[in-house]
Structure formats: structure tokens, C-alpha cells
Length: 176
Image 1 (cartoon, rainbow, N blue to C red):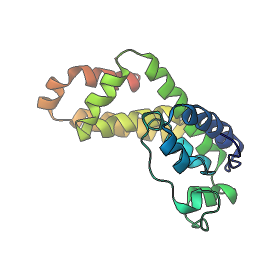
Image 2 (image 1 turned 90 degrees about the horizontal axis):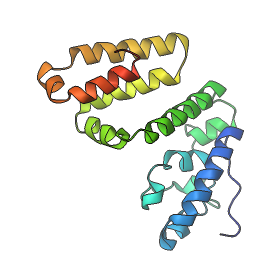
Image 3 (image 1 turned 90 degrees about the vertical axis):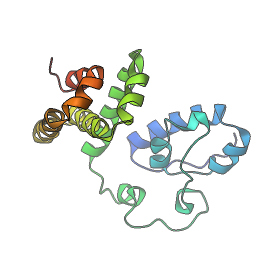
Image 4 (image 1 turned 45 degrees about the horizontal axis):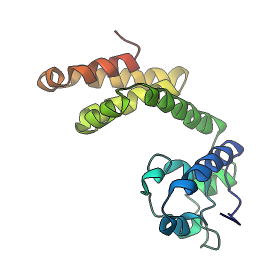
């Protein structure tokens, strides 16, 4: 597609969003391409990276599109432009993406994600465990501790029914 707008965000976000946009625009239905081709906000492309290929995505806000309205001060794009989003945030996103890529390579990753998403408690524990792996030091320890506490408190009836998922979460927490 010609004349796509220049992406905005941190250098890492722009590089990542460029790849996502390039891949997505080759597989998305032409009707949807027209709706999203003017999006210049890298964070929008990153946030929608998993669903774009299925033609599903969150409608971009007017300010995220070329020629759109002003950027709200509280948005991630405004914070990124102002240099308020720390590099550790970007590194955390990149690490989480790498971990997700590793999970995709595992044959049961999609089944696991679907299964834990059906039970809110397991979904929360899984998110805490994954986020714990994305960070270092105190935050990692705190997220891992919370995931372990929640897993321990998880109803034993559910635990018996979802034993495979509990084992996978324990693996994410580095426990046997």
C-alpha cells in the first residue's frame, strides 16, 4: 500500500509496529485495510498484533490516525512523545513478546491459553506469572509471590479439574 503514514512512538515501538503493520496489511481484507492504513500510533499496532490477521481489531481512536484529532494527554502516545514512558516499560513489552513467541512454539500453548481464559482465577494467575517473568528484581519477586499465593488459594475442586493448567502455571513460576 502506498503512502502509509510514518509511525510514531519509541524507536523500539516503531520498529516492532512497522513489522506488525507490514505483515497485517498483506493478509487483511481490503475493506479493513482502508480503515486502518492511516493509523500512525505504534502502540495501536502493537496492542492489536494478535487479532489483526483475523481481521479483528480495536477501532483506532481519531487521534491515532493521520489527520485525526489532538492526542489526549493521558494516552500512551502522548506519554511516549513526551519521553514519559521509561525504557524499562518498552523492554518489558519486548520481553513479554519474546515469551509469547516461545509459548506459540509449544504445541499446547493455544489450548492452554483458551483453557485458562475460561476460568478468571486461572487467567489472573497466568497473567501474574507471565508478567513476573517479564520483569527483574523486586517487581518480579512480588508478581511471582502473588501468583504463587493465588495459585495456592485456588479452589481445590477447580485445581483437580484443571490439573494440567496448574502444572503449566507452576512451570511458568519455575516450580515443579
